[in-house]
Length: 179
Image (tube, rainbow, N blue to C red; front, side, top):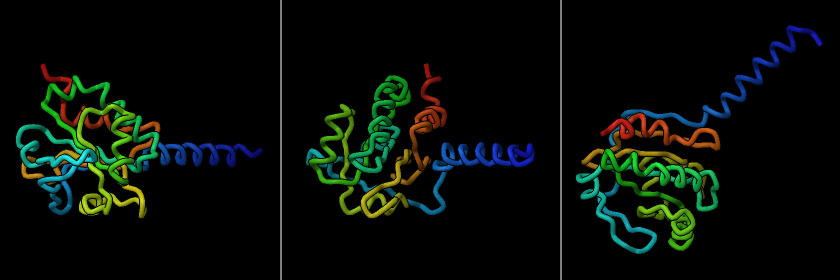
């Protein structure tokens, strides 16, 4: 085979692979337009959550999951759960936003044992505000940090089996470096 063609194919393969691994995610420090998370939401367990009060008392982080069946999303929650000690150093609190019925979302909570409220976004009203609609049944996986006024401070969209986003979150917050 011609060396030039082989070299071109190798470059293309490398670029294609990197695009798959890293191309499905990005982060930003601020939204182009002001986007606000709802002040109150209802958890999959039926409890009213005062997000406004939580955001005043904690660094409020919303983790979105693509769908209740998504294995990478479940793995994301398990990864964050393993690192909760670091996140607690900077007073972080979490909400998990998911499409699906209360029962299906509650099952994800049970199976991951993630110790924070899960919010079913059945009509995608929250995901739509955050510009995270992936398909008629799916929310784009993301990590969102809210300001005290519930506006979006930082967002990292996308997730895959090689790039979860929790490292970027920890770096942005600097929690692991707190004494």
